[in-house]
Image 1 (cartoon, rainbow, N blue to C red):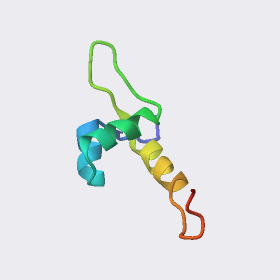
Image 2: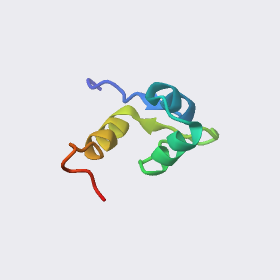
Image 3: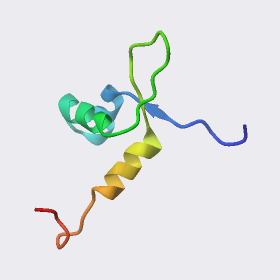
Image 4: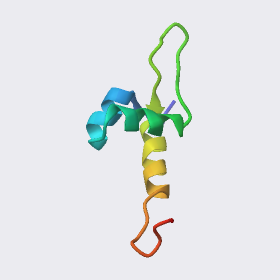
Length: 66
């Protein structure tokens, strides 16, 4: 495998990096595909998926949805 593995973020790390509440981080995670491993309760999302969601939901002042 020559590609790097995706960086995985849990809700706590997402909260810290984005500067949002835990509830917001968890709501964002529910909008994304999750990575979950057998026998591990913690759920992760891929950093790239978070970046894509942010890019898709970023608008100029003229484009802000109602």
